[in-house]
Image 1 (spheres, rainbow, N blue to C red):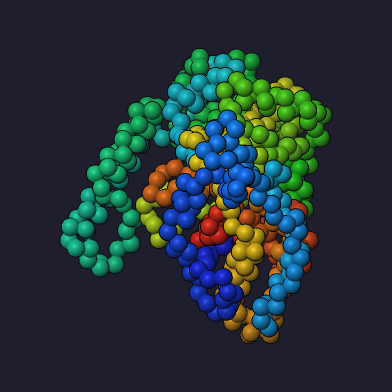
Image 2 (image 1 turned 45 degrees about the horizontal axis):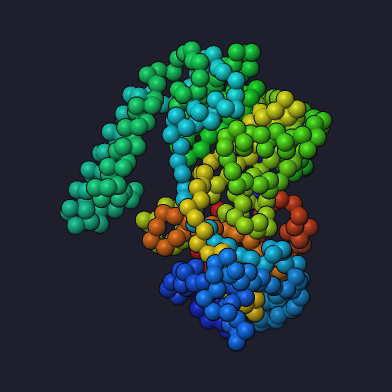
Length: 484
């Protein structure tokens, strides 16, 4: 199944002038700019007081927040040098009200009981379960091997880290990290089954984590469930691996002549009824603060053995947390794998993902991973950089990016004709400094391309797209990784 791949830049800028293409990437080291702006008073009409502005305004009569407006289109051409020309012909999508709140969020993890409770609200009662997972003895053996690695690395560190030519996996040897990982293994051992035998069940409390389980329901229907402590998925009517293919993926797969596409069946249920089913699902799960990012006609298939088997036709909904009515981009932008590629302490940023598949009978599939909880509102309308500053940063970033390939252009006597064709001012997830929390931060997403093939596929969500993502508060680049 094809998935959108976004190539993100590894840039950050210190200067407003355009660098020469030969310059190396540099990292924005301006300390605490984001924190200072978040701690400031939200931008309001009182931000620039006049003689007529009342002082010490009571809260109930406080001035309203001030909209921050940006151009709706950017048209320009910049000849950077003989090897690079950048054309800007981009509509700019932004918030209708011009207000840019920043929320603090936190990643949550599921317990086995929580997953079982959610499944119990979504699915009929099961009769049997067969779990394809490691047994208690297999998890215990994996734990023993991990302890051996810890002991070997500790001995190597105690010896002064000699250069012995061994390629070692980096292990955090702090007491806290060792205890946390040991607890993790003990949980897996406790939750794992003694054997792989099918057994009778009457609920989903026994769904094992880190496993694929096939439940048989009272009506004979099978449900495949995959559960982790950071997410789960289920697909009704499936015994192998449930796969939901929407119309975009269908078009792509047909172009490759994939055999399963001949089983595709058109959707008969209406979009309105399907969305109503999704909203009822969220209500049953007491999940508030979500909105529909996209709804696409889709088919559910069961990949069992070596074949795809048609199960049902319906609608696939992608849902996103609502952090202030920012524009929704349902294209899978997941920047900031880590905030700093040299920082081995921070965990990768985990981006919440929620899709629901419904047909005329109701919910038939769901994929929910890396859930977030909202800690609070950091700033109701944070100050963003002027668009003129962002324009310079974008041009600097593109010139540095293309500068990495200048030797190739010289060797082949060619030049790069880059075009920025679409810009969004929306929210993205970034890490809170010195914390495991996140900010849902206003950011500029700049889409561009430089060849005819990608230009023809600009509106195809299945193919790769080049994207530059900048923090709208301090202008820094969100991701230092080259893409994934």
